[in-house]
Length: 484
Image (cartoon, rainbow, N blue to C red):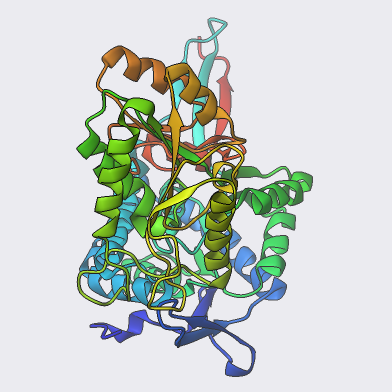
């Protein structure tokens, strides 16, 4: 990997402030999806280590919450600075285990660090209220206090940013966190935990557990000490965690599946729409929860848009993320590759046609060509399921009412996008789309300053922005009597 600081790549897990090294006889192997090469081992932990981490978090959280907001803010600020100082190394670790091109990986490090920076500032702005009393001798106070110990389970597609978007507000609010990162990409989590220690985060406040998702998750959901569970991943797993958390009535933050529509109206700037589609569809090789999964193009501009998009897609370069000039890396594993192939084959069997790509890449392995499909219909799998790969299916639509009906015809409601110039249409469509987030004339909507989250089966709660820290607090009402 050619790291400047080799200590950031640690083959260990952090449990209650203690580092546990990987045992080669019982370790999880992590590979580079571009080459299949094993890059390292991490411990295969389970219920016992999870209980230890939760107990340590409970003790550390009380001391952390007692610190001033200014103190917590200062430590988080230092963590942000260390992440940016080590951006190149963190990016290299990310590319090695996840596969995305190195410039894109470095971009994720900056994006992930921005959540730590934002919530370092928000730590000093967790305000309560004084409410006019209902009687002359009473005053009503409202306090916001940390929820306590938080359990977090994060995915492989953004192995840095999906952690910081949860850890930033949790620590800013005065909480502790026990983290289970994805087994495909644990080293990014471990590296930022090393930097968290250097920044001054107290021992036991932050644990990173690698190992059995089932055993660790079951302990997290069953523990009465864990007062909040935050998860990013599939709707199926989210629903199971929801069910497991019911007996202990935990607060839940669930960022789940998506099936984002990307709508191009006939008054849109087509060049801008193509640029937006490239970002919304092909960023991270289509492996994002806010990925444009269904591209709806109005009749009058359908052919022109398809031609422009296929030409742009044809210029994308696929390969090893460490090579120069690469736009798209590999898919994460063979199962992901198989799903892409199934969706393309299903579309072709039902009347769809290939405009660009459509096959495994000549590089072999887990690489797939950037693909554009035309003449797509609602009967095809790509209309109903997340492809999570570099496939852009183009649907035709006649008018505004038609496309709103099609766009909302899904159980998901995370992100949506549309391109149009008419101001009245912009307001109508933005209000009509049943999604937690809407991008208008842009294909990139994620930022620390804005609330991220969905509706319907896409989840519960919001991450990022000033609303994000509220997910990690509890409201306490205090009635003061005898003050007349």
